[in-house]
Picture 1 (cartoon, helix red, strand yellow):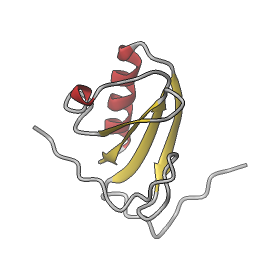
Picture 2 (cartoon, rainbow, N blue to C red):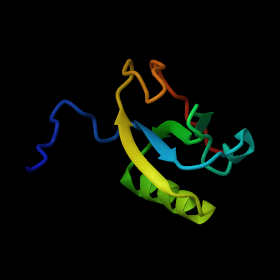
Picture 3 (cartoon, one colour):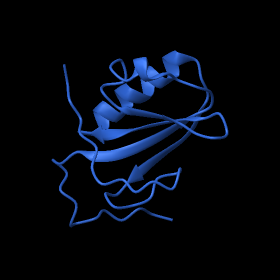
Length: 98
């Protein structure tokens, strides 16, 4: 099945991604993961959620996840107002760079 581009999406605007990692990460990893929000789940996984400016930044973030040595379970694009994997509604995620 071919993916059709979304003509209403602004390619210059950040996109919110949620990355599911097997295992626990503490909040202290947020800065190293470019200010992403870190949320533990009930089943022992960790959700890393935040805005990503472009595909290059997403690949850089995924490299950091790889470097943690924890298994990557999923990468999902989240629309504002959509419920995340924990059932919480994502309103907006601020992304700050140091």
